[in-house]
Length: 239
Image (cartoon, rainbow, N blue to C red; front, side):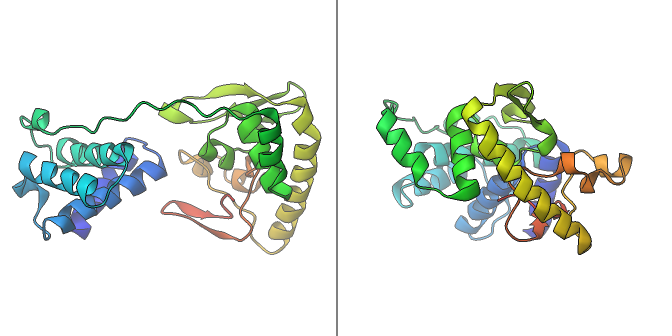
């Protein structure tokens, strides 16, 4: 199993999927194999995939989106890793997501929600609400992508690998400036102690040797503790 999981990881990275997708796919492939008592996936097919997905729905009571994520992981395993034809794919039923009405907060509810977090978490929550950032987009935001003069944020490698620009609300500019002054002080302390590096995407570190220590590449919301970026590189990481 470890060898197969390494193959899955290698193909996921070859296709530049996000680390969250990598973690999810590895998890579901492992669960699928364990559910079938460690049989190799190449020996199984439509019946085993359907039984596993049914198990998730009827015994694990997972949401439809979770069940479909597991199905996508297994589809990736058979199509991209094992290179097996999938004539039985039509026999695997996808879970139907129920239609839901959106929840719309009143102004008082928004104020109450944003008043609960303190410090950097309040800045993060306000950015998520006021700019339309997804959670991981906010956590991965770099200093160089905050443009106070143009009142905008540049989102790199967002959903689907796309870049985009979104607004920076006037009300958040001063809180964000104050937050970044604290982050810069933290970075200076890290540099003095021989740290202060961040993960750089697409092997940029080999092209720009010292960019991982530069201010512009630092995360806007660094982690409170130094850590390893999971499976990728050494860095302070994100909150």
